[in-house]
Length: 210
Ligand code: URA
Image (cartoon, rainbow, N blue to C red; front, side, top):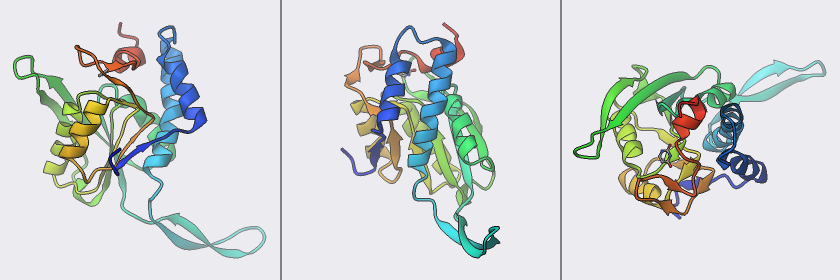
């Protein structure tokens, strides 16, 4: 596996992922489980955030206590399923800014085209965590990260729930500098570019649109 890829193999994550994959999981269950797993994914993606020290007083004595001291964070959702990971990430870092990128597949070229892009102006000085539950072919993820780099970002992470081996390869070859965190690397893509065994269409399951 590429050095920059982390699979969060914690038993709680794997258990919750199984519950989510089941086709009979309701929209409410799916949403809740994505939120719960998102907390673990965020925990892992942010585990090397730098710390500084501040002076505080506990009821017992003064102490020098650790606080986050690095760059400010931006969470960037790849619409629309990425929005399902925003809630847990903001639970972890409530002060983070939020960006969104919308990509649609051009039916002629089969490549992603951008229809929406909004990120904070100071993206270049921030740690940018890109969120998209499904890393399938990898084309959208590669394009999303490229768009964010094109406005100056040089510190990025990519967080997904499931990844196909094809998507991991495409992504890590295009952006070897961007650490990727996922809960599972599944078997393959099928002929419709769905992840197998996967969980179906993450956006439809999250929003109940099917
Ligand atoms: N996007 C999804 O929502 N599901 C897949 O299996 C692949 C891409």
